[in-house]
Image 1 (tube, rainbow, N blue to C red):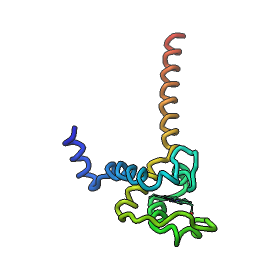
Image 2: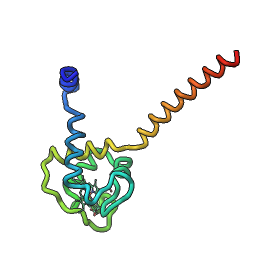
Image 3: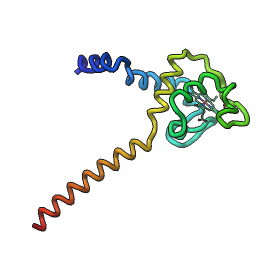
Image 4: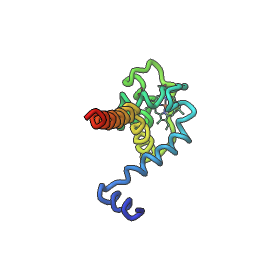
Length: 129
Ligand code: HEC
């Protein structure tokens, strides 16, 4: 199992999943005091909302340089501090934020519900015939 995971990572040429996991750690240590991920909101916008409207690249570049980008992103003032993280950490945390898109999770659940409905339909047609 472990070997297969390693092989998979080699095949796709990058450790996608590790990035998201590392990004979660970066988030917890550096962003969580201002940005929530459950819609509650804090000093900064909730990251679920951010993941809908921004690309990974946008998130990484804003995190890296909020001072220069705040106007471009529609803010009249910049309250987010410039954080002393590495480029890799900005990239990882952006991957993590992008992975939060709840709508896709919801869509997936809907598909499962549809499958269940089809099952129920099949059963009831069996019963009636
Ligand atoms: C001290 C509070 C604070 C911390 C810590 C913080 N932010 Fe922010 N962030 C803000 C505020 C406030 C804004 C709103 C714009 C501004 O003031 O620059 C913001 C805006 C953003 C935006 C733009 C959202 C959008 O789409 O309009 C991104 C992306 C972002 N933050 C990412 C991060 C990441 C990633 C981290 C951690 C590495 C982080 N922030 C840490 C306060 C914070």
